[in-house]
Length: 157
Image 1 (cartoon, rainbow, N blue to C red):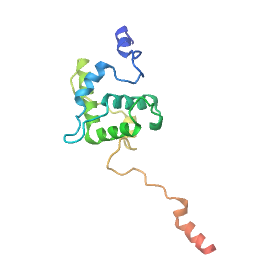
Image 2: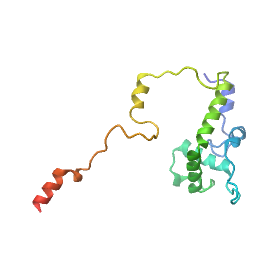
Image 3: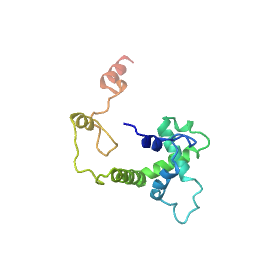
Image 4: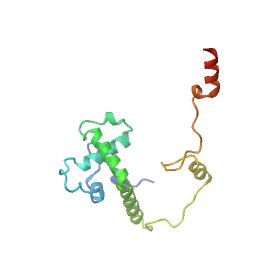
């Protein structure tokens, strides 16, 4: 049930876009973003705006090329997102926020019990997140690649 304190916490009206980070959210996330590399040029991109752009794409479902011009260039945003996924920054962000939210609710940082229902178990066998294992179904062959097609084609020519 929504209470007045929930509505205040979910209020997004003072922001440029509803998906933008407010100051309190940025204060939680900023220490988890890795600093720029040593020895190179100083970072010229506002990382908060990069995160705002990523959240905008996730919030609206728009294509990268439809990203508004007041965000950093789409290639920059995508490159940061790709880098953060590769170096584990996104996973660390998610875990830190997850632990903090559980502690805020008065629960232990990690759950002690997990429940898997039949729908979850069935859905897990069909794929899920990217992994190194092969797909469960073999790839379809194209009709033109079949032996029957090639043998009838060469016989008729």
